[in-house]
Length: 319
Ligand SMILES: C[S@@+](CC[C@H](N)C(=O)[O-])C[C@H]1O[C@@H](n2cnc3c(N)ncnc32)[C@H](O)[C@@H]1O
Image (cartoon, rainbow, N blue to C red; front, side):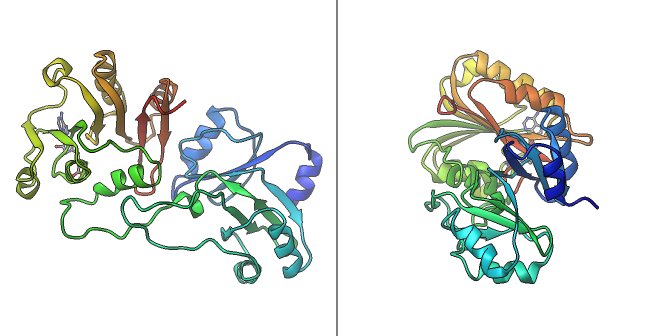
C-alpha cells in the first residue's frame, strides 16, 4: 500500500489539507456531501476524511481539522515535540497504534474530558488533535472547529424533569453553539410532544407557544408561560401567532415539507430566528439539505445527539 506521505508527494505538498470527521455510522453521508461539494478526498481512515483545500462548512462533519499535516516521526519524544511546537492542548483520535499514541499524549498538555452542565461556559481556545497512521506517520491538526474533542459534548443530564431525551439537542445548541433565546422572548415549538424542547424553552424564561397534534406531558402542560395548541403545525398561520423571536421545530416530516413550512414563516416577516431538526429517511435527501444550506444567514450542523437528522439554524447573527 502506498503510504499517505508518498501519496502526498505524488500530489502537491504545498496544498492545504483539511480533515473532516463524520458522526459515528455516517461516513457514507459525509463522503457523499464532500463529493457533492467537489471537495477532493485524499484518503479515508474510518470516520476521518483527509481532503485537499482549506476548511469548508460541511454538515456531516461533526468536527473539522484545519491545516492538517502528515509528518514522519521516529520516537515518542520526537512526536511529542512536534505537537508541542504546534498547539497548546491536545486530544488523540485513535486510528492505530493506540498504546503508542497514548504515550505521546502523556508527554503533552491534554484537553480535559468532562461532562458539562447546561449553559456552562465552554473553553474557547482552539485544541489540537492527532492520530497515528503507522509507527512512523502522524496526522496532526493544530486547530479543530469544535473546542471539544471530536465535536462531541456530554452533559450532566437532567433525569427527572424533561419528558424525553430530545431536550439534549437544545441544550447542545444553546451551550456549545451559543444560539439561545433570551428570557422574556416569544418562541414557538412545533412538533413539541411530549415536551422536552418546550420544557427547555420554558426553563430559559421564554413565553412558549407549543404545538403538536398529540397532547403534551401533563407535567409540562402545567408549567407557567406555555400556551399549548393541539393541532397540526401545517395548518397554523403566522399571522394568527404574531411576532416570534425564535421558531423551533422538531416535527417528524419529510425535509421538503419542513422547507415549505419554514419558507411560509420566513416569508411572513414575523420571525427573527429559526432552529429546526431536518429528519431524513434513507437515502438522505441531500437536494433539500443543500436548499437549507443555501438560505442566507444559515448553518446546518449535525449535533452530538442527532442521529439520521441535522439541525438548521437561521439567524442574523450568522454571516
Ligand atoms: C420527535 S417528536 C418531538 C419531540 C419533542 N421535541 C420533545 O422534545 O419532546 C416529533 C413530534 O412531531 C409531531 N408531529 C408530527 N406531525 C405533526 C404535525 N403535522 N403537526 C404538529 N406536530 C406533528 C409528533 O406528534 C411528535 O410528537
